[in-house]
Length: 108
Length: 117
Image (cartoon, rainbow over all chains, first blue to last red; front, side, top):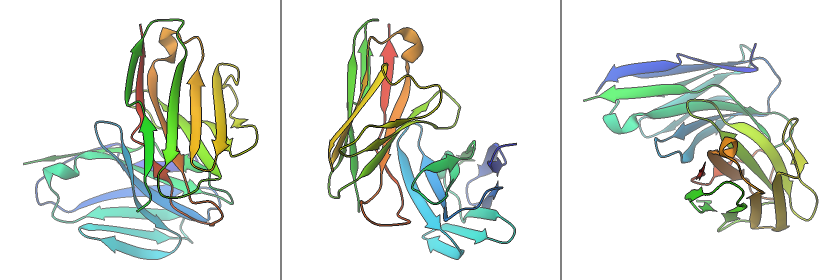
């Protein structure tokens, strides 16, 4: 069993739909990260959180430390949101442990 | 915001060539940088942790003589793939976080797509 598990693996949505990607982890963490990887390969850090909820534009990330679970929500999805979304966690150091990623495709 | 520059973005070369990839933090200092490898449709795999002024820490199964890492300054780490072979073809990407600060986000380079013919 992976230390970080994401679901779903693949997600196809229509433009405008509300999207949720889930992440569960089984280890102690100091922080959880949501990353976005575009088709060209570049990775952008969307959120780093250790408790509660963060919002940036149409993106919302939540974490429940007791349940070891985090969700990434995208409101009013758009084709440009199509990318791979990766959940990762850090323990005591800076080293990241990654989930397998969720391939999101938003159709116009 | 913090920017990491990785160069080159793409390399195509013959088998037996050594290839150097640079990872540079442009507007912050990074005591530690990380090097990852990613195969198509797979997650990132940590290869090594690069520490400024000391030897890199390699993950199990990664040959340190094959993948040479140098982190000579707080803003630059290099990965050299020595005597590259077709099986070394992959996407390589680095990341760094701000030195001396705990619980900081990782900043990623744009990656290098390496193709060995």
